[in-house]
Image (cartoon, rainbow, N blue to C red; front, side, top):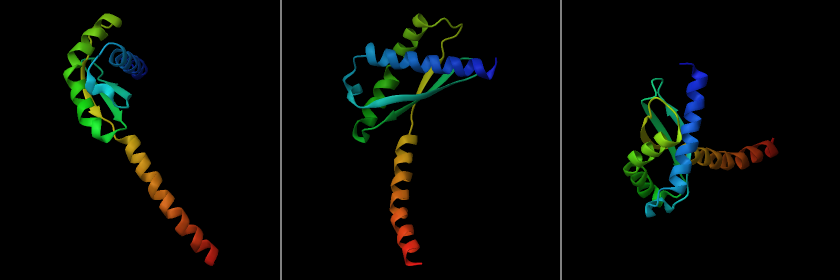
Length: 122
């Protein structure tokens, strides 16, 4: 199967999964601010790794527990909404890329004033 088709299927699964979680899942643990950033589907369409970015650290554990417990419900809904030969098993993983980016940006802000003062002295 071509890489382009796998990427299209991955994006469609990400989009539909996000809709299912926001519209059909009524779990109180999903009250935090979160976003499904990307999905990686294997070439045989058997498994999909869903990366979830959670902005509130104190609610991260509850959100991940709710998503993992609702994975079979989400998969069943994906079966009804998408026309694929196989509906992949979903695995939810917390994505820390945004958190890491914020950390790097704060480090760069700390370094910038030190560099400016060094340039002014020369």
